[in-house]
Image (cartoon, rainbow, N blue to C red; front, side, top):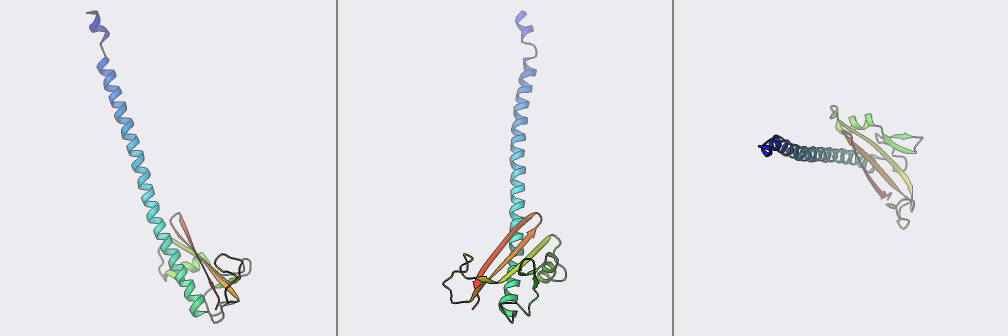
Length: 158
């Protein structure tokens, strides 16, 4: 009889131990799933930001390579000269409406900078051995949600 009294409640302790282990396992698995869902959302946002930067880059290349009557000053383009940075640019609001049209996507932002007089040899994309006088460097930044992506291209002014 004495032994049966000392064993009283052991089932309750075992049940609590098993429930605690099950709860800890469930919380661990839930934490992993939440983290994976966040990563997959960031990948989707990253792709949208890359596509935004790519669209802005295509727009700028069209402006600088096709429409510019003078590559050194980018006259004839929609790009505005910024005296502070020494670049031709489209601000975020201008970029959004000019690249994406009258009804741009709400969560998309972009910004463009074009430097048409990069000195040969001063940038890795503009080697000193080119026959051009200088190079043009275009930087396009695309943003979707909280994700930013930047594309850059440098080519000789021929």
